Structure formats: C-alpha cells, structure tokens
Length: 332
Image 1 (cartoon, rainbow, N blue to C red):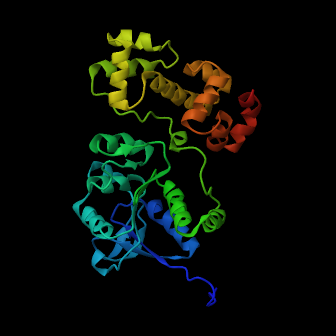
Image 2: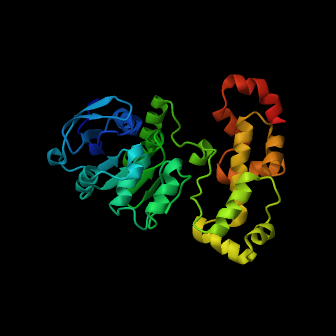
Image 3: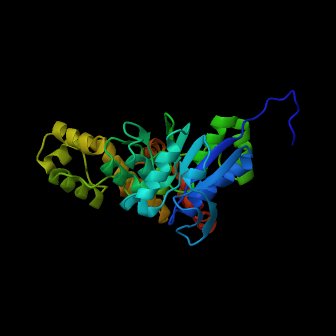
C-alpha cells in the first residue's frame, strides 16, 4: 500500500535482536513475528559471529551479522537462554553493550534480563524475568527491583519480560507505544493472542518463587508452613516457633522477602490451592485443604495474587475433557 503525498510518512523503526548459540528459539521468533505482522520494522539478528546461530532446540537462525555491520537502531532486544542464569558469556555482554549504547530502547525476553543486569543497566530499576529465574536474578543483582509476577515491565528506556512467550506480550506493547493501539490490536488478532494477557505469570507456576532464607530462624518457619500450609499459622504462632517477637519476625520477612508473614503464608496456601484444583479437587475442598478456609477467601487470594478467578484459572490450565467431566463439581 502506497502513501499519498498528503499522508504523513510513517518512520520504519530498526530493531536488533541479540542472538547467540543456545538461545531460546521462541524468545526470538515470537517477537520477530509480531514485528513482521506490524510491517513497520527493519529487523536484524546480531551476534558476535556472523552467519548461523544454533538455538537450544537445534534449529539454526541464518543471517546473523556482527555489531560492526549494524547501523543505528531504535530498539535492542536481548533474547534469553537457560545457560545465562549460570553466567553471561563475555561475547554476549560485549554485543549487547555495543548495541545498547545509542539505542532509544533496550529490552530483554525471559533470562535475557541477566544480560542487562550484568551490565548494570537495570540497577535501581524495576524488572522481571521468567518466574523460575526470578529468585536467582534477585539474589545475584540485589540493586535490581524484581517483580516476579509481571508479564513485562517498562522502566525508563528499559523493558523486560517474563518467560518465553511473554516476549510476544512485550513486543505488542512496543508496537502499541510506537504506532498506537489500533495496530497492536490488529497484530494480536492476526496472531490469535491477547493484546493484554489477563493476570500475571504467577498463574503459570505452582512452585513458590521465594528465595531460600538466609537465616536459620526463617528457614525453620518456611519449612513448617510449606510442609503443612493448612495448619494454624497465625503471626503469634509463627513468632513463637521462631522464638522471636511478632514484630521482629515481621522485620525478618520484610528484609529477606519484601513481604509480611501473613501475606507470605497466604501465598503458600494459594500455591497449594492451585495444585489441588489442578489435581481435580473442588473449590471448596481446595480452600479447606490449603488452609485458605472458605470459597470466598480463596477467590480473594486468586484475585489479589493472580488476577484471575479460580474458575478462570481452571479453564486455562486443565484440558477440555477434564473440565467437562468436573465442571459441575468445580463450580459448586
């Protein structure tokens, strides 16, 4: 479609993807497809070595160029890989640092956040990553303010996303920022995805993201709660078990986990309730067995932490034949 002289010219934006051997394929191809469907982006795959890059799944990406062959870019997107959690290779850091120096916007998908954090670009900023890696990112880079439930976050010129497919959510947000909601919505419809996915990434995990406690007192308390979430875990009871005052226990939880003991216990119980629902228990049974107590308390916990109702959660994470067999019992 040609643009008439009276119509404003739409600037084509240049995007560079940082890729390397072992990169997660969907971290690259998901955002790439969003930009392709948007039709207003020039995209380059950039690596320390020109040519092919072999992804973690064994599929090779062709046509990678080196930073020396890249003209000015608007946006840099660092794709993730599991091995980044164990340490970021020097060549990946160098490529990212070179590209990010003059870019208007620097983004990461999944564990690509480890690259930005290692370069110090996220110091003092809010960021997210895959729920499974959030605790490791927080421990290694304490100056980064990790928000493990977010699907994507923008802080200044830096944008980070949660795990893998959340790169699509992030890139739709970039398209919306660049060209408005109408184009982003059209791309989302074409790809048959949410323009803005409901809920955070906690709904995808039934594993606690709390980092291991550093103190023996907290380790004993967390073990007690996780072993039996439905027990009477009031603040006075937990404080007595740790042989400290309720106020001191609250300070310990805030210092290590950034959350109160009461909210942490609720999150453990919610985690157990999620698993109970997936195992086929009713909402009433899941509330009772997890320690949340009532259906209404369970619903409030789901809304507060996951942004969805228990029924919505089940519809997303249980197969159709299981839902049809248990829907009457679940909705009771």
